[in-house]
Image (cartoon, rainbow, N blue to C red; front, side):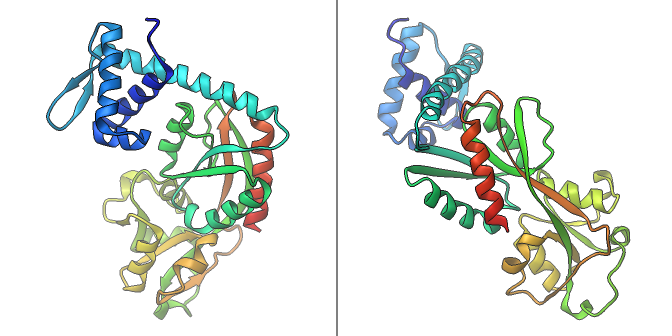
Length: 295
């Protein structure tokens, strides 16, 4: 077991996650033959197969499943040792892997990245955009350092810092722009357009209207806020979007924007990171930068 290397563990973890040699090699920035050779050497060192290989896919063996869990813990600990050293330096440099949910990324991310580059010239920012559940999983596995999400996430292993609260606005066809603004509960009787399942904004919109997910079969869905707004522009229905999305999503759509009467429906945007991460001081500073970018 003395020949086991950290590089092999990282390659193994990539192949376990991607289930495909080509994609894993691309993620590791090496050639596919080089990755295959490292995995083969790892299996020879262990004296057992970690993967079942087929023509198109790669699956973990029972040993591989157990090995993957231990490997992720080891790699997470190694990363945190590196972060511990980074935390001791005067300047915050190196790689920052930050996740962002799709209903925040297009509207806030450009300003955040620009301010981060100004505050930390040596910082190499890597962005991952996906839904909240995947971001939380990748944080737990050590594949992300922090994430911008809607709070709360209620995960004991994570630190949550609230950044700001923003309102939801009603988007309706331009022909209805002069109509009285309906009570938000009245949306239950309208053709309400929602994001697909998996998006936290979908659940927030349903909660605002006091609707359950089991009563959404007749509602129309879209994969992005852009799609929803364009559907409204076509006269298909109405939707809710966060206030930060209004300037971008409505500039080329024939829609009307209306605010609800108080108390307006809102969401709290925040940043989360693993409690065990030694870079908490830096993440609190990043939280301030994001808060400033949102104003």
